[in-house]
Image 1 (cartoon, rainbow, N blue to C red):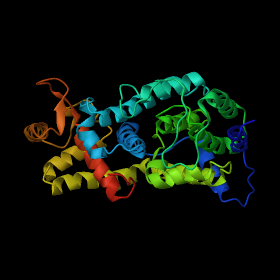
Image 2 (image 1 turned 90 degrees about the vertical axis):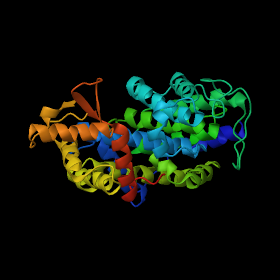
Image 3 (image 1 turned 90 degrees about the horizontal axis):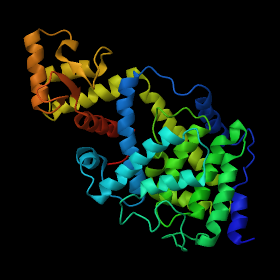
Image 4 (image 1 turned 180 degrees about the vertical axis):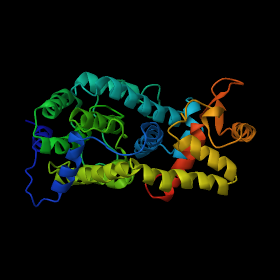
Length: 373
C-alpha cells in the first residue's frame, strides 16, 4: 500500500458528527432542498434570466480560479459572440459542459466515462488550458504549482479513481450526502487524474452530485460561487486536507454552499428581486443616460408583466399606452438596441439579453450578491 493509498483511505472515511458540531445546522439547511426543492414567488421566466446571468458569472469565476482574466462584463459583451479568443472559449466550454451534463447525466451515477466526457468538453480546442490527452486520465506524473505535495503517480490514477467512484456511488445516509460530495471534491483534486483541467471538471461534477443526491437545484445555478470568491482561500482549504484530515475542508465547503443557497432563496422572492434588483438596475440605466423615464416604465412592464413574454412579444401585448405612443417608445428602444425584432422588420420583439444582463450584474455587485468584476 502506497502513502497515497493510505491517505485516500483516510479521506474517504466519513467523519461522525455530534449534535453540537457547527456543521449540523448547515447540513440540515441544505437537506431541505432534497425534500422540497427551491420555492419562491419569482415567475419562472424571470428567474431563468437571473439563472442565465449567474451561470455566466459562476462559469467566469470557475475559469478565473485557473488564471483566466476575463471579466463578466467582457464575456457578456464580447465573449458569447467571439469564440476565437482562448479566454472566451475556455468559459464557453464550461457552459457547454454544464448544459450537457445536466441534460444527460443528472440521473446517472458517477463513472469514468462521465468524468472523461466532461474533461473532453472542458479542454476542447484549447491550447494553454487544454490537455495532452483530451478525455483520458493522465499518462505522466505531474506536479502542482505551489502545492506542498506531489500527486500520485500516473500508475496509481486508475486504481485510486476507482476507489473514489465506488465511494461516491455507495448508498449513504441522507445526512452524509453533502459531506460525501465535499469529500469527493477534495479527493478528486488530490488524485489529480488529468494533466490539466482537474479543477474545472470537479466543480462541474459537484453540480452533478448535488443533482444525483436529490438536491433540487437544477433550476438554480452551478454553485461554483463557493470557490471563486476567494481563490487563495479555496486552494488553502484544499491543501489543508492533503494530509488526510479533511474536516476543515468539509466545513468550508458546506458553509459556503449554505451561504450560496441562501442568496438563491432571496432571488426567488419576487418582491426582493423586483424592488432590490430589477427596478434599481433600470434606474441606473436612466442615470447612465441609456434610457429615459418613459422607456424605463415600458421596460419595467415588459420585464414584470406575466402577460408579456420577454423572448417574444408584440406591441399590442403592452397595455396602458395609446397606440401611437406605444409604437414610438418601442421604436426608441429598438433603435437603442435594447429590444430587438425576432425577424428583420418584424413586429415581434425580445429583450436584448446583453443589455439586461449587464444592468442586472451591476446591481448585483452593488448589493454584494456577486463579488467578481
